[in-house]
Length: 208
Image (cartoon, rainbow, N blue to C red; front, side, top):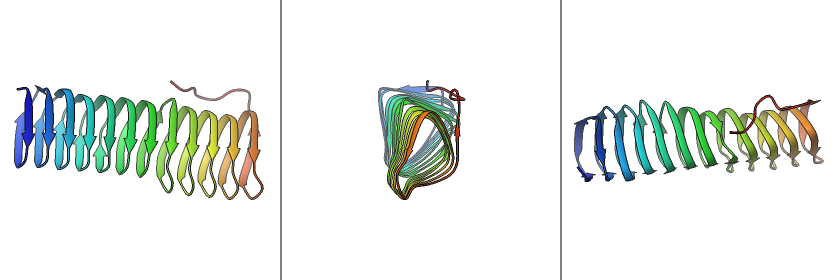
């Protein structure tokens, strides 16, 4: 089957493959799914297996019991997965996953799961529950993050991080860090609050 557009309610049994899969209604698949090109969800999608696609664009609800593998994932709805591997991940809604592996991650919403990436941007008022391991992490205004381990970390104004471990860290005015461990240097602007600071020899984890 080359292309499937779902406007009503459809149940399928995998393993199954498509060139394009467009879900505007409700789709449930028992088993693995592979999509050669685009997987679009504006309704509700449930996959009881592994999902592989070139690109995933979800504005509705997507629940995957297995691993999600794609070159690009962009969603503004709600997504659950056991693990994610992608080149680029853009979140504007709610994501719950096991380990998230990506080259670039941009979050404007809430994420529960550990992130391994090269570059991570936590957008304004976003929340991340889990550990971020990356080359560079920017936590924008009023965002909240649990744990960061990265070469370079910037905590913007009024943002909060429970734990930061970095080669170089900048904590801007009004930001809060519970514990900061640094290798080379850290800068805390006037008005920033850092409870504990320790210098360390090396990072406890490295970016992929």
